[in-house]
Length: 277
Image (cartoon, rainbow, N blue to C red; front, side, top):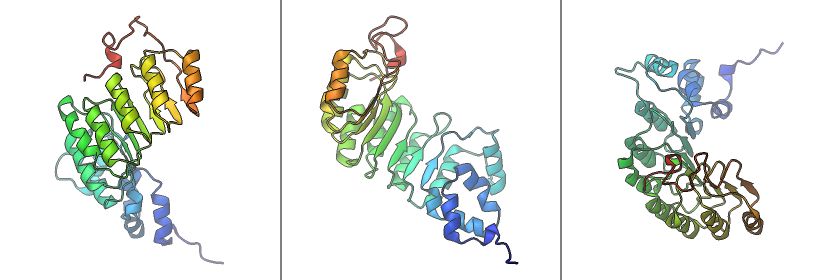
C-alpha cells in the first residue's frame, strides 16, 4: 500500500496557496508553530497580501494579545502597532489590501507606516483619526498610486485636499465609501476630480436632493450608488428618472428620508449626520 502523504510534506507552493486564504490570527498563532515546513511557507509574502485587522480583538486581555505575547516572547506589553509592524514586515511590501480596526487601533503613525511600507495597496479600509490628525490623511493616502478602493468612516475635514490627492496620485480609484455632510463644494469636487468613480457609497450621510441629483448627473462612469439611511432626500419621480438616465445599475436607498425622526431637515440640527468641517 502506498504510504499516505503527510501535510508537512506538501510542496511549499501548495502550502502557500492554502495559507494565503487564512486570517492574521491563524497566520501568526497557529500555522508557524505546526512544523518547520509550515513555518517556512508562512513566511512567503503572498500569505500576507491581505491584512485584515478589523474584527480582531486587540485588548490586552484578549486571547490574541496573550497568545502572541507568549508565542513570540514579547519583552513588554502587547500593542496593536507592534502587531501591525510584524504583519507588514512579513508582507515585504507586497500587501494589496489593508483593513484597520475601528477602535483601540490605528494611529496617525500607524497609517504613515503603512503608506510607506505598503506602496502597492489596492484597497484601504481606514478608521477615524483624531481631528487634529486629519490634515495628514491626503498626503498618506496619496502615496498609494495603485489604490482602487477607499473606505473611510467619516468624511474628513481635509476632504477637499483628499480629493485633490486622489485625482493626482490615485488615478486608478473606482470605489469610494464614506459618510458625512455633503455640501456644494464636496459634491463639486467629487464630480469634477474623480471622473472614474464607478461605485460610491454615502450611506448615513446628510445628502440633500439637489446634491444627489448633481452626483447622478456629473459622475458619468457611476454604475453603483449606495445611499441608505441618508437624510435630505426621498426618492421621487425626478430622482428615479435621473437614476435611469444615468445608467445606474445598482441604486440602494432604503431608509433614506427628507427629515429624520426628530423632524430636522439639515445637518446643523442632527449631529448624527454631520462631521465638523
